[in-house]
Image (cartoon, rainbow, N blue to C red; front, side):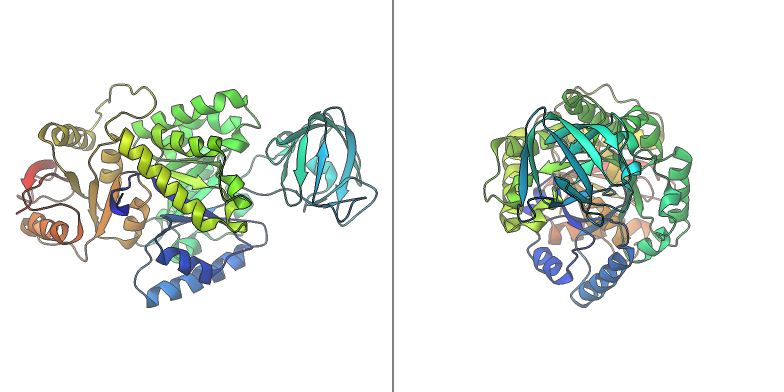
Length: 483
């Protein structure tokens, strides 16, 4: 399938302490992914800034940046396994149900079986009777005792622990605040060309609104704010959060630590439905093809996982950051594209993989987009074309999951990059707004040059902010043929 016609997008994840502009440039030239997600780690903000500055210089020299840039501030790594005590040369350990073992911090080593690297003291990381998850549930333990130098654990689910795997204790995780990131200058991130900022899902609505206000105060297009749905509290407040944010990233492995894992698939579908109702983006993350860090071939379950996310209607699949630490990065991206192509070829004329309720029109904007979408279906249009300043028209049209592509013409390079992460949308940058009477001819010429459309193809042309027929008729759509 031509990349232009591929509807579902791909997000590539990298850790902030392993950024490489050279590697980035090579992968971008291959057009391997649509967005780069940088995972923030404490103490790495300056590293991110330097990378962004270098990135901007690189792509300024060779044309505009063609990929979307995201900073994930919602995933803070609290602790990871860095050594096995008595077996210092080992790179993994196995534990069985009923086993008991001790762990400690690497800077205060003793005779513990596992040594962790963490900026938090043990008494902050652990609590009596709390559940402990290694690598998001590969092994589950219960805390028996906690001291300043030692923690004793009882294994309730056996499995395999490897070096560098992370460890989570949901019961001791503090409710994050945007003010916890006060040393992170959101305005600076926007100036450096960051298109999306991902914030923790347990953030207060008031703080989320403050973050959006701060970003809106900057001149030009605004960096969009995505909420990370990674905790039962975020799920319980999903409706409230979606109303304020620009989209949701569902971190399933973290969510599954605080809800019954069996409920996660339906939660994903409910969040997708909620986001579609409000024309917000939604991304599915967690362990996507994670085994390809070490294996050239993923498991069948991992491939099915990607396919189901596409059938659910996700805007983008978020590949595991573990892949970037392995040697099969290129194959992982190729395979993801193959899965998207196969699913979309077979699933193009079906509704998303969940029940859709009747759409409720509440304003002129919704009415225009809704009827334009249905008109395009009835007349067999080859595309829906819209003029959009901030991307909202394209988002509403995309929420209906049309079979035909949506060409979104905008005047902002940042909006172009942001719309590259919206399912089914192909953004086009127009340099300067044409005269009102020239809008349709100018856009038509652009489509003939830069799209798969042919002369004589029907399109539905939607404009909420501009009109091809007059200044007063601003909310309309028309059926046109490319000539």
